[in-house]
Image (cartoon, rainbow, N blue to C red; front, side, top):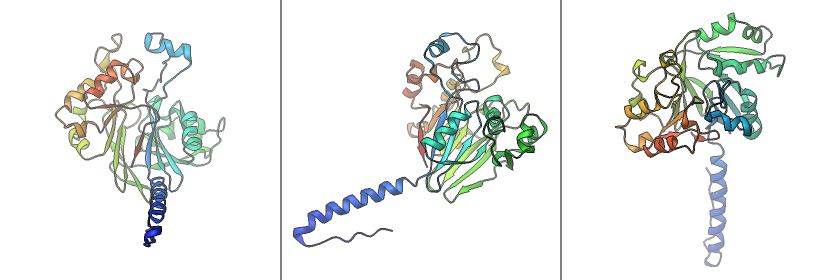
Length: 316
């Protein structure tokens, strides 16, 4: 606690008040710098944007300009300890690590994996001897994800030579990150060919955020997404596809996700305050919502939902 002693003599009272206000301002700034936060490090589906093999309008301009959208990932930051954690090691791991360690001035303390689809774990290779030669980087994984990494090359080489070490996760079991941060994995249904799939709940002493970049359909989950939203402060949800007619040449049943239109209809009865908690993320390259300025993004926001973008910060 900070105490400020004021000079109560009339001739000095104005100066004392100004000094007090200045000290309080500085104290408030320093305190706010200790508040943990989540930073969005990418918003695209596993293939990123532009997307391999795509020469349609959604990619054409970006091929010409060199611009891109990174694959979905979020960073958890505790400024008090200068620690950070990644959720998922994406194909854009190098850039996302650089943002966390050099722009946010933190030290990466671990990587949490959601599942074994290409956009969520392939960046682990950057920790190997051909690139970083990391030493015992903690990688947090559920049992089947751990087994997948243990049994398959080249991932098992990362383990055998000590580039990474796997920390076991359990469904709905909270894990302490620091004195002011906790994280909890929870199972979600999602084409589990190689591993189970989890979302994450990140909790501070004051607020919480849920992150579900991949799920088949909300109706297949054993939890009620409506109730989950009511009991959190922020929700980053699967927004892979905007609508069912987005990629007519693909069988959508092979790549199930809740369409953004479905999710908005499902949660439409929520009041505006709760809808504003929701940020769609993990956009396929074909999804017009990946362009923050598009008419589709404007429609989403007009319904009081939100569209995630790289650099977005959620204070906890």
